[in-house]
Image (tube, rainbow, N blue to C red; front, side, top):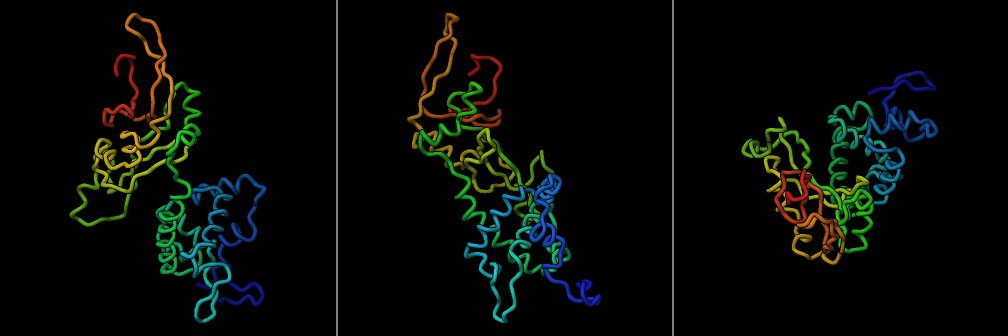
Length: 281
């Protein structure tokens, strides 16, 4: 694709540094305007500052060697900017954009965007997941996540849990039925996710067919199994108030932790759904 040269006024082949993303988000971002940060988050699904930190992490990782700042190919040609490629990966994830649309917007070939996206997914699975999704395994770590729950009266609760579906574009026809469910008209993978009250992900399973319900999905959650079997967090102590038979309220001390769920999960002692009456469970 061509752009008009500012000096000669003649058309020339465009480069990634001619695109609007490079101008607005790399060289001249309007950092002092609230509108710029709102638009960036809406279009790329993450805060601008967090994106800058993400770019720095990727620029130092071996997976992105061809696109590091200052890198060149065998012919001495400068690699595509990692900033623009990362924005393309976020746009593809957030808005289901095609690689061809990214080529039109960035002057970077769709094949390059595709290659970068595969590395981006691998980077998220191997590096970002282990860095940011950290399941507590000690009592001190658990207490850090239980603070808000304790303020609300849910002593001993480490967080809340539910299944989350992520749609996929296609799958093999033989697997289509198990990736469809009555609540969702599209094929999808489902993940069992545990978060604290600060929206921080504590644990997540790998993807499973979306036809699986909560009762099935929890059987494949290693973090839940470790809590249930007493391998981790069994030494944590907390107090709950209960109504005795004569109508008096007494305090009872328990060990371990529990998780808030909906009515779809198995009736275990560590998975507590909402209920109307004190004597229901």
